[in-house]
Image 1 (tube, rainbow, N blue to C red):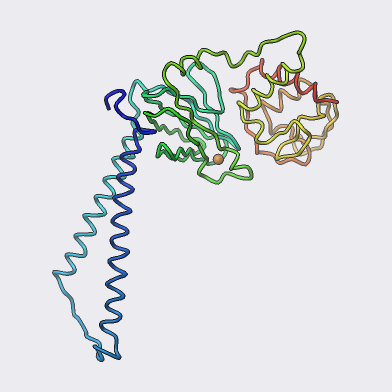
Image 2 (cartoon, rainbow, N blue to C red; image 1 turned 45 degrees about the vertical axis):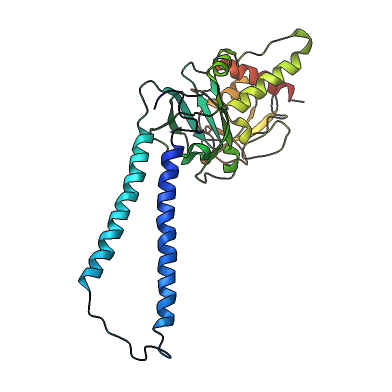
Length: 319
Ligand SMILES: [Cu+2]
């Protein structure tokens, strides 16, 4: 593809749509063809009128060869269209920008080569993007309808899909594999930016939030909320005390909780260490009343510095 010539949402729109229309057209042709012939035969050869005695036909080689060969050719064409499009989608060009795409219950996150992590996918226009797909817990499926792109994400299996967008804009991303209670919360967007805007975004330091001494509480809250959103924590935990699949952050810091550790109930006080452990080894000490195994370790994702910021925030919610 020559740079800048393609102006579809993605470079697969044309091939996938062609395959779709081809298969859909053939299906429609046969649906109507068979239905019309069937209805005609029912009327034409009905007992009461034209054909009182059923005709016994022994076989017709020419007819049988025709109805075997023609559908076989059609099916081979369908396979060819599907397979060549699929192959193309799996072979990312070497100069593609690689973005690690992580799916877990219940959010996607995107990790760029420089280490930044976001919950929205930002990509530059006219640039091949290769998504390195990883599922951390159960099967998810990355689905970007406008790009005609859909790929299952299976834990333990590495998959790559790529695309190149030729149209700036915002396109929806869904998880297309039912993955539990808050499956629908995995919805996010891909933003296709001009190279200029992308470079601008790329140089903003999203991790730092300006600290101003007169508004420290607000700074802590803004920074923490950005971290919680980025790592998808808000799919399962709230800050207002309401229960989702995980405990709320409200009123926990400094308070006593009962956790299940190695099958026993243990009482402990929520402090910096416990918060750190809950993020790094979420299944070691699960708060009583909540299910084990729903959260994966965020050890390689949430940094120490981010945890410190979260702890500061949880302290403000302690009451
Ligand atoms: Cu999912």
